Length: 67
Image (tube, rainbow, N blue to C red; front, top):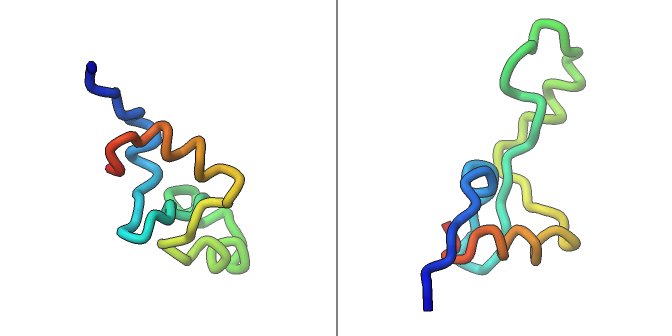
């Protein structure tokens, strides 16, 4: 059987933990921070959040080898 291709966009955004959870980074923390309120910046401060349970199955299909 042929190898499955990993979706590169998903690989950059998600990683799978040893227990099988899908870890992601919160958005709105890359640029244009001078224009954002302190509240907006603090809400995105968490580096490691987990993906919603409804999305996990689809993300795992994009990452067949658990990258």
